[in-house]
Length: 192
Ligand SMILES: C[S@@+](CC[C@H](N)C(=O)[O-])C[C@H]1O[C@@H](n2cnc3c(N)ncnc32)[C@H](O)[C@@H]1O
Image (cartoon, rainbow, N blue to C red; front, side, top):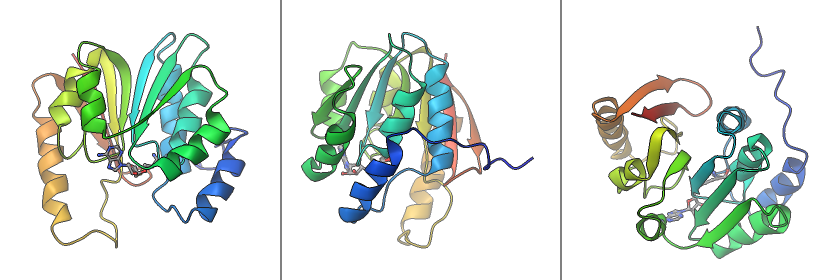
């Protein structure tokens, strides 16, 4: 089995990739992460989804590709230049709302809401304010993070932060989780 040769990207992806290169934004999610997110999004018909760290919308495009017509996505980023690219390519899709701001503040503003899938790809909601993201999950809701396998660009103080986060997720009383050496290294955790 070749686990890469069946990955068919969303039709809009090449255009987003072109603008992403032009912006010299290098933190976009990989195809393997995208195809996983698309599949998980498809498992939540009528779902409420949240993405922390839109970037240029690469992962957003995969998530939207898996969502059914009744699902809704809120996606958040601090950087207006990144968001502009994402909005230009995905903004006509009525299922998605783009929010500019700090993901910690946006999570605060969403307190009381519940989500069926959270992709936490900014540090707030992952390395800090992790519990805020867990609080926003429905029972049965899925929490996804990537960039967990060591990478050359990591500063020397990053590995212990990743280890602490992995331990925290594994030992969280409300989460059932597993780790995947797939793409940049992922954790999938389910609440309940
Ligand atoms: C790893 S990138 C996300 C890439 C995205 N998944 C994609 O596929 O293009 C992380 C993003 O988080 C954003 N970011 C960093 N800190 C943030 C914060 N506190 N709140 C919201 N967004 C933040 C950055 O601007 C960056 O676009």
